[in-house]
View 1 (cartoon, helix red, strand yellow):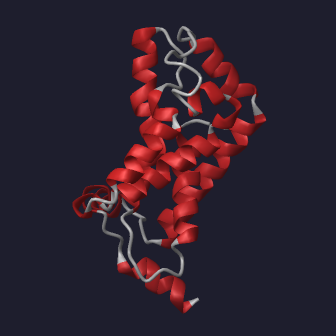
View 2 (tube, one colour):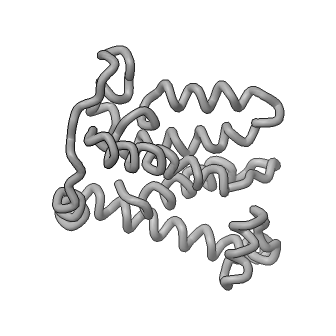
Length: 175
């Protein structure tokens, strides 16, 4: 899965699960969590010459984030944890038990030098990735439309402050 798939599907699942919730959640934390494993592991993989799924693609990392979310000042980490969990699910991480269950299978990760050709080949020829990117894109557009994010200003406000325009929600309730 690539950027649009992780962001859109992670956000879409959080939006779907919080649909009837009276609690307003800050979706920025979900979006951050949905790409956090790649933000950590891709640069490390490039530097170390290891596979691109390293420490941040493990249950150990996910459980550490969720454990920290029990600290009252860090409660929003549960949303980051949700995003990380969706990332692991979309990466089909269970097909790499040595990674997801690290360190149960040992302390090392498989070597896999960075290969741009493999990345493009996956993007262009893997239907799972292509469908995921399309679904993610549609989910991002649907979320933005439903919440009234229809201008650069409202997008900037959402990114900077986590605020969503009220007219988008009011408009949905009128329909």
